Image 1: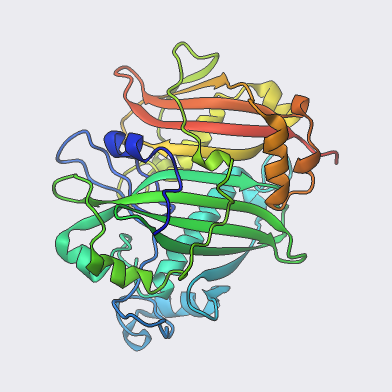
Image 2: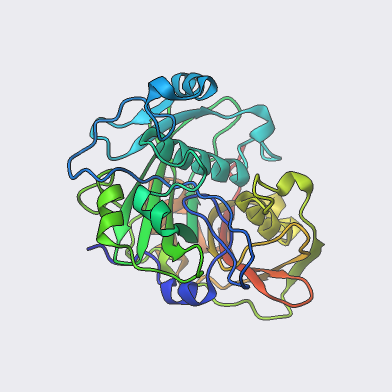
Length: 374
């Protein structure tokens, strides 16, 4: 049995989590009547053998799928790996996905992670309805709830670069599951980023967390690695660190953020990537000018509705052991990060809250490194 990958599970179970579509569906615990948002996690079939997957674009065989879905499946630059236990897909960075640094933005990276997770799910026959649930889960009205997302970026891809992303999921104890990603520069094979996420199971009707039953585990573990496989080494890694609640008043803030219509997904809830943009809105401009985002960790606690007004709060967090952090980043595929000086690193704590009543939407931590010379 795998150990829990994030030390915040107890906090997460109590706080419950907001909408985030990287792997699962996040919902509010504010009470009944709140519509949960979509999922995008891969699961599988009840077989106890490695699956033989033909081209699956829905819960039905390819021959009975919709024409548009079949065309998309044929054109998509992704497929299950040979052993069927992970999924790889290639993406070209578009001009509109590039920001002020002339490289892909972190929002672009987050969108690609979500996309490859959704496509992985579709490739094994799930997630066509947006919920990524197994047959047993649908029968019992169970859903996946995203608890934490951690992204590390060692090198940002530029316009027209081709990025290959591999993803897989695996069981984690009786109440949790995780999904991991590895990002590579397709031309060179260099690892340019890694990500991991934690999610738990919840009853859609009662809004209570529920243990993962053997029936459900049998359905999705057939598509998971047999041995623990972690994209990010867990020892001394920031992906495990608890994120404390930010003291108020914060050092920096951006108040009165309002969801745009373009921020809403098909379920009329704010898209998960919008949260990342809101967190970055309160980063001081001098950091934006001189540094680039190295890691971001978000704990999701409640969803944001279309009519909510959001406050973004940020404060500096002292770096306890910059040398250890730099060494760890270097082992994860970034040769440049290993040579960073303490003076070049910046770290911040973040809080998104509903303006007025102060309800937490999520907590976050970001780390920043000096921009490379161009």
